[in-house]
Length: 294
Image (cartoon, rainbow, N blue to C red):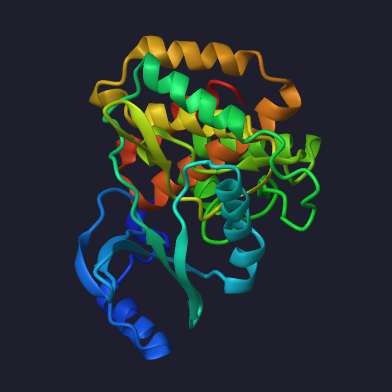
């Protein structure tokens, strides 16, 4: 019953040469590709602007520019107004069925693992997101996709077809979706991909939080669940387990109507992604984590 990653549609990776040519065609500005950014399944690239600045080239396949302006880009404008360290978007344009973004390159690098000081900084950043979107009903609430597929991620069918274990997890995810609203309640900023690989620091000082492409409105504590899944991805690479246990204790204190749908979403997102992109042993690791709270 298990399907290999090759049997599922995989995320299309960024082609920097094609996208820089599209930017030139649309704007007349030549971007020089300086290399690929590390990490991520879709990819990003360093590009040199015409004025000499080094920036980051990204893209969102299957996205519409008006939707990004109403959602993630609007969220980042609010964050900038409040002094929260997220990169500015220098250029955004529609290229066929994708959105191309050129964003500010922030200094710093993510930690290889999250220690207690790093967790303190992550928790402070997360707390600073609370209430920032009060009065901004125009910014969409985060959709959890617990009963239907998301746009290229959070797909249900890969779990159902992967194995009996995957199908049982998908059923529990749908049960969580039937018991909770389809979108996160609240007026907080939600990053949606808030893991320590997206936290930048220099000499222990936070310099930025990157990858806001899925940001929206909801409950900022959702991002603590995302952080927990991010730590699981690094378990085999030296992540201190006392930090994991400390974060788990914080999750234990969350209200059920926050924790359960958030955990269900991340379980669906990461297990589906692993089935379509990662080796079988990685799928088992995500199933093990998902089952801890579902």
